[in-house]
Image (cartoon, rainbow, N blue to C red; front, top):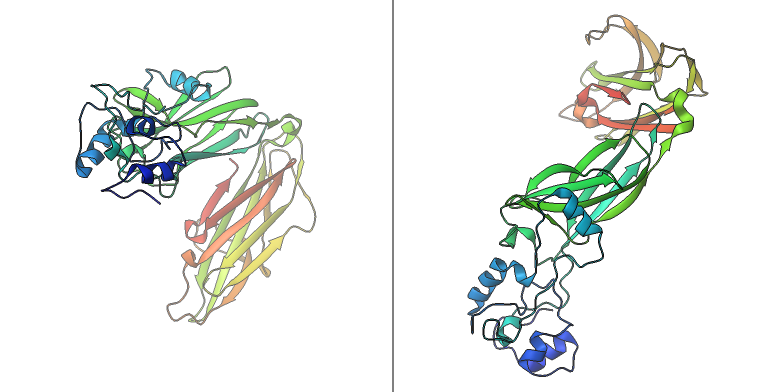
Length: 367
């Protein structure tokens, strides 16, 4: 619980900090102060502040934190990877130009959380064609008080992601503006071509400088399945359409085509799930055994309750389709957006997953 915003005593401050230290100077310079509180002692020449003035002054002073900007992305990422503390807290010096003010503890929150964190998701890739991928998600802690949009140095900046393979050059991906960013948000989803250790961190680009953000630096491993070279040139196309038969009956037409760009035939298996979100039904179909896809060719699969040859007006002409019969008493009827399509197909030792709404009609997967 935060301290009150007026009429605070030294005893209340000591209790909040969990310290036996006494006196304004000792308390304002205490090592037990949580630097992530938005209200706390900081360096300023003023003798006193009203509470409104204190709030404004802390934001202008970056909440009492030393925010270091770097002229290059590589330097900022180096700082994030280093052993030195990012955004250190500058306690008052107890001098004429930096006096200690008991009133700076008004609103102090000893349990304010670290404001930002990041999560990296890395997926392995197949040698020579399908590169490995990774995605970085940045979140702002619930109840965070020291946030970038309120910091004088960072408020006009933009979020960026900095990443590199260890020992390599640093890449920068632009993100949302600090003022309008909502959390959590994805800053980057990219592909990389080689295995190894990678580094990543969130940063803010403001006034031409890069400011690495604490607690967002991560390292992760990228693997490439070099033993799967024979399978890398395989991809899948899924087409799925809804046709209304009468007021309560519908047909779902589905085709899957798995293509092989290799010089030799390759085996594949597959699964597809059609989910009716309105009537809470799902239709699950999968291959009964691995199918050989000829070199330079493709195989068409027709998942469904039955197979028909039809021209449904999608430009394919009269071709084979898998058909699923759907019945619904929904007063407003059904539309493509009421159905979710998900599944997978195999490419070498990898299972390639896919998921989309039927209203997107056709999806090319793994190209």
